[in-house]
Length: 184
Image (cartoon, rainbow, N blue to C red; front, side, top):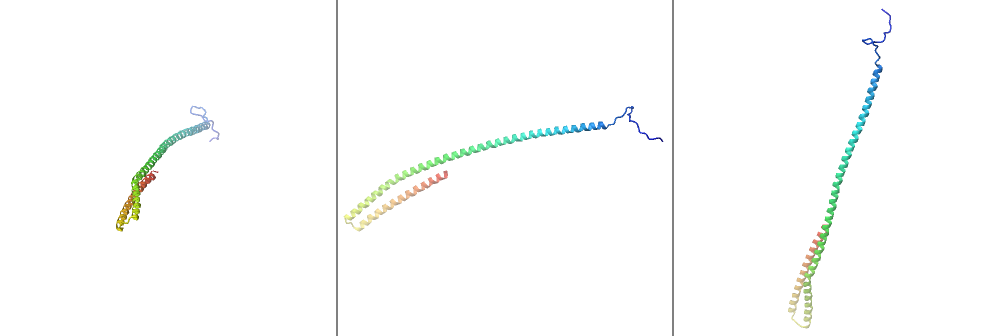
């Protein structure tokens, strides 16, 4: 068997020398890595663009919702102010009505009581006259008692009428005050 010698350079089927593929593999590998790095950068840039678009969309939606809520709130505030104005107007009208009713009632009560005051004054005058007549003339004690009872009856009626009118006045006044306070 022969001696061991080193084989010669490799040749292809046609006899051309074969080159070592290591340098080509390295070049392809480096090109692939550069391409992957460029793809990652492009992907990251695209992701940032999408994220910016998403943020802008969300911001626009939030601003639109905030504007919608603000407009609803403005309407509510305006309605609240209008309701307060209407309530104030009603309170003023009721206060004026209560005052005019009280004034009218006082006037009608004064008008209604005037004849009673006149009657009481006449009754008082009659009593004084009767007492004066009693002292100057001698009447029977039975007749004087009857007249005194008659006068007492009229005084009782006058007091009852005054009490009734006073109670009616107080009732109307209480109703007016209640309406006035309820309107506030």
